[in-house]
Amino acid sequence: LISNSLKHAFSADAEGQIYLELLQANGQLHLKQSDNGKGFSGSWEKLKGESFGFQLIEILSKKLQAELAISGDNGFSFSLTCSSPNNG
Image 1 (cartoon, rainbow, N blue to C red):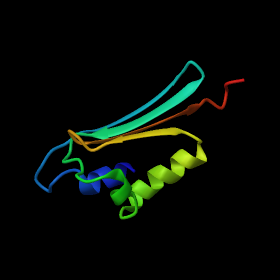
Image 2 (cartoon, helix red, strand yellow):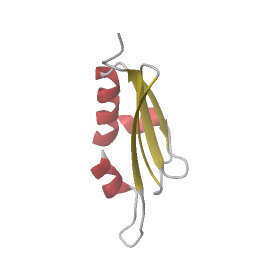
Image 3 (cartoon, rainbow, N blue to C red):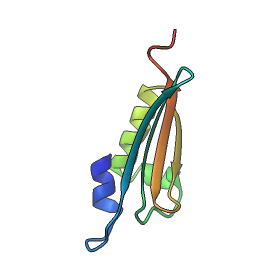
């Protein structure tokens, strides 16, 4: 998924940043990846069928039974929140 940001977020002559965050708190795991690239336009529903990266995010969220949030404003970001495997 990071390679997806490298491939699509930035033009060849642009500098950019990619952020990766993994937190465990209150019995939850929270994974977030974001970049400050060009983002995406259009709806998530349309894009998820056209992009392998989007398909990976959806498969991962289903596998983890995670809540998925995606934004294409001010770059691209997605986050997954699920129960921690150490919870209970």
